Image (tube, rainbow, N blue to C red):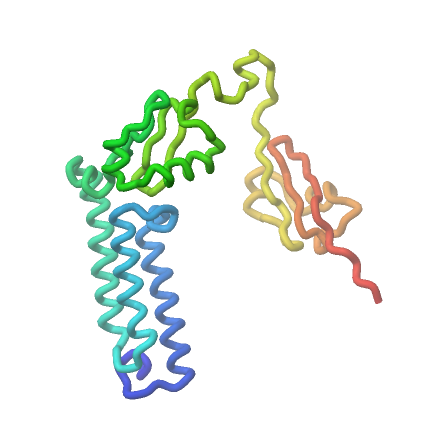
Amino acid sequence: MDFFKGQDSLTAIEWIMRSVVGFGFLIIAAKMMGQRSISQLRFLDFIIALTLGNIIAHPLSDEHLGLKGSIISTFSLVFLYIAAIWLSLKFPLLKQFFDPPAIPLVLDGKLDYRNLSKAKLPIEFLYTELRKSNVEDISKVAFAAWEPGGKLSVFLNTAYQPVTPADLKLATQPFNLTKPIITEGHMEHALLREIGKDRTWLETEIRPHDLNNVILATVDSKLTVQVHVVREPRIT
């Protein structure tokens, strides 16, 4: 465990061991913080991401620094992060501080310049985000808001929204969800149990293909299996 402590110099193996420990520790810390910190960087998430990155990076690049202090500091910050999230759920004022409400930027085709300044966004950036939503004219926007996660939510006026079968009162088919049941020659046992089927049923459904040669096969809500990609036979 010498690599765990500060040293005058480290061998290649000890550097590798530090990297393995640091990598595994960051995975555990990320799992403790949950999906929120991975999916989007809000105010609190941004702060914790910057801090954790700096804390764990130094002992991975400086042999004079040990891992013990970094790990203790990281666990303390993860605890504070989880506590702050829990407290924000209990106290509305804290929630508003950590997760401020969305800032309306466009209402009924009119730009709210005051809120645009509040969000510290230039007009050119707003139009860039509108173009990403396939909106070429701000007058078509019924409502647009800058979300805390750093994204623009855009809702078009009803006159410019795509026509749906419900608008035309047309009959539609039920939603049919497709899931991969074979990937790289391996069947998804959990999915087979979920639909109440077994390996024999699956092998029958994919005939004449062999299970080991199927790269991708899917099953839908109607239990229809489709083979999409098959490994080409080797030429000897």
